[in-house]
Each structure stands twice: as C-alpha cells, then as structure tokens.
Length: 309
Image (cartoon, rainbow, N blue to C red):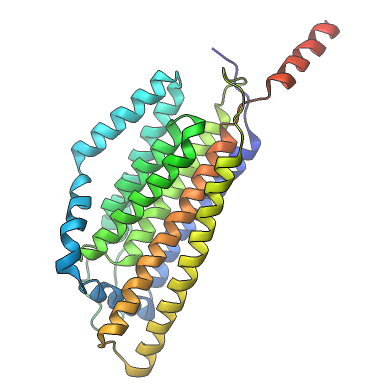
C-alpha cells in the first residue's frame, strides 16, 4: 500500500465548496421561499413553465424517466467498479457517501427541516418542494463520475455531467414538478457533499501515482468554459428576474405571455449558471485534491534521506 500524502490545497477547496453549497442551499430557501417577493418571482417562473409544455414534455419526460432507483443502483455499481478497478478503495466509499449523503440531505430538508409559509397570494401549494429530488440524483451521480474516472477523462465527464444535471433540472420545471429554486438548491446540496468528498480525497491521496502527472490544459479550458457560461447565463437570468420583479411591483401580477416567458427563461438560465459554477468547482477541486506527487521530487527526497542515514 502506498503511503498517503495529504494535499492541503484540496482540503481548503473542499471546505470552501462545502461552505458555498450549504450557504447556497440556505440562500435559495431564504430568498425564494421565506420572502414574499421571492415566492412571487419563483411562482411566476413556475407558471411560465406551462408555455410550450405540450411540445417540450415528450423530451423532458424521457429525461426524467431515467432518474429512478434502478438507475442509481446501476450507476453506483458502475462507479464503484471503476474505483475498484483503479485500486482506489477509499474512493469507492467516498462516492457512496457523496451520493447517499446528498440524496438523504435533500429528503430531510424537504420533508423535515424546511417549510413553505404562505407569504403572498397565488404562490401555489404550501407543501415544501425544495430541494428537487430528481435534480439531486442527477447531480450527485454526475459528480460521482467526475470523482471516479481517471484524471484525463474528468474534464469531458464534467461537461457531460453538468449538461445532464441542467437538463434534468429544467425538465422538472417543464413538467411543472418543481420551481426554479428547488432545482438550484438541489445543485448546491450536491456541491456541499462534493466538497466533503474532496476533503476526503485530499486526505487520502497516495504519495505517488503509477503514471506521470497529466497536463492541466484540458481542465483549465473546460473550467474557463464553465465560468464563461455561468457568467453569461447568470447575467441574463438576473436581468430577466429583475424585470419580473419590476412587473410585479408595477402591475401587481404577471399576466402577459411574454412576461411569463421572460421569467421562465430567466429561471432556466439561472439553473444553467448554478450548475456550471458547481461543476467547475468540483472539477478543479478534485484535480487539485488528487494531483499526483512529482516523481522527481519524491526521488530527491529519498536520495537526501539516504545520504543523511
């Protein structure tokens, strides 16, 4: 068994991810569920999701049908198998903790911890639906794959995983299953647990890897794409939701189809922005936490040790 060599940078990034995820989940609930203006904006976007539903639902339903208990079992089995084939026993455990912890947290928050007070008229059912369970499953499985695949494959897997997560989240909105805040909160719950998994990775990384370090160019390119996508989508989302707030303040309600569509598209872009930022953080942090030690440096250290002895 190779000795462990903790990566302090990975520990710090993992803790920051956990903090950002926890605060992001709380902020989603605090603003969009526990304030009147947030509830109203969220509900307008939810009503806007009915636009084009008859056309979009056939595709969205197929996406949502993928998320099921058998799906989770099969993917977890495949992920664990990859980890074991790579002789990374602790990584297999970390993946199970990530997926299990994120999904258990979502259910506890939704059904036990958080509530949905009625603070404004026409804000929908009082049952709390934050965070989204379907989105949590999709995001946690995607994040687990980023953690478990070989270093070279992580940038590509992060892109596919982020796309699948965002598509699942938006599909729950298309079907009228969830409000936008539910989806964003699910992503931040997974971000928090991915942070804890990153800390474990950083503390249990082997001192040396059998293969030489891989260049950081693909990770930098993909991270840059994520950041740009998050910036553009986030700016457009903020503009659309601020417009929705202004309409609510001026007219008291949103009735025009164009205004409903603006809120709906703005909310969907917000989901895209949150997902892109989350997977950028997961990718970078895990690359840092699992970075192979420099063989040359290890050899030098052994030479010095031999000389002293």
